[in-house]
Image (cartoon, rainbow, N blue to C red; front, side):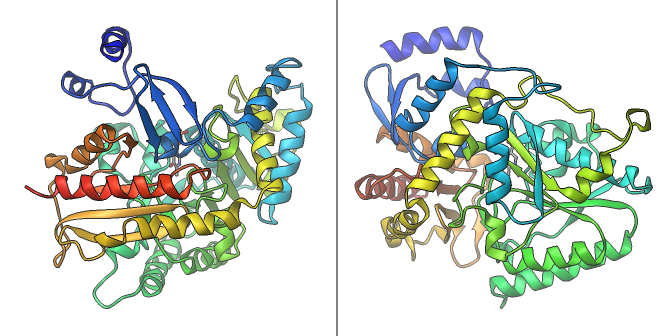
Length: 449
Ligand code: PMP
């Protein structure tokens, strides 16, 4: 009853993200009163395992004592101060540590307050860089099919998920779309490496045909997350880095979802041993506590903006909450956990358990593929295994898995027909087994009629 009463209050005033609000005529809304580790608890005391890290942000559990304490301590000193003309210790220490831990080329940190804003910053900086360097013809960006970079107009334009994008088409700048190296969409007889090689050839054609007009190529390294947890071979990233060097365009690595250990390495770019010109970070940056993002870039980019004021070469971009001190404190505590605990080593074991937990689905007639990169595992539900024919999206089979999951106390939130696990790294073996069992049962149900 408590949940129901709360839901009525909520629906009288709130408009929820990424939701057709009419769905809530039949779909319950879950009011959460507390969280602990991987668990969320609703007003009636029912618990839900957060198998998706609350939109991929939470990496060390809800109510993590180390992060909570760091924020409380910061709160007694300084909550926030304008970052233009002013500065503070947590902002500088965090920037120092991010520079030290990211690939070599990245030496400058620009803060923003969410992932989409970070993408906007990277796009504007890249464009403005070329302008400052005397190349005003460079006005275009290259993205990958199936990509996702956020919801603000610039970031949305650079994505390629029609569900989110098509409606707003008339408002959006038009990128040049290169084929994704997504291994699931590989051609007959190709393995993931072959797919990467083929897609690099396509990328090269685009870069050579539009020489002098492209600012940057933007990619989600290793996993196209919102596009369906589509995974690709690291060779694509190393090849892309070489092509960007060869054709003299920037490479923007959007590590917003995959950074901070998600793919098995601290940053996904490490698996290809590359350094992008811009790296966008958010989500796990604050352990999932507070909204914050950072764009890291090179000394070369920074120096192109460094001039006298009247030249208008400066980057006059700002967000009110840039470099928020509480968010910086949360991020520093998050980095401390990585520094003091064997997180990545432990994740190797957790990742293996995740795969074990759903191994019985391997030959399931409605499972096209189970794929995994580090702490992301995805199960592609299909109408027919042999042909890989997709279930029509209108049937909303993923929604059935979601509802079944909730009934069993597991928060799974499939992306269309793709059921995935992206849990906090503090999940244990028993919880993984539960997550796996509920996913299997949910998929059985969703695919049974
Ligand atoms: N880039 C990627 C790769 C993402 O996954 C997301 C969020 N899902 C974003 C950008 C946008 O981040 P935010 O939701 O914080 O705006």
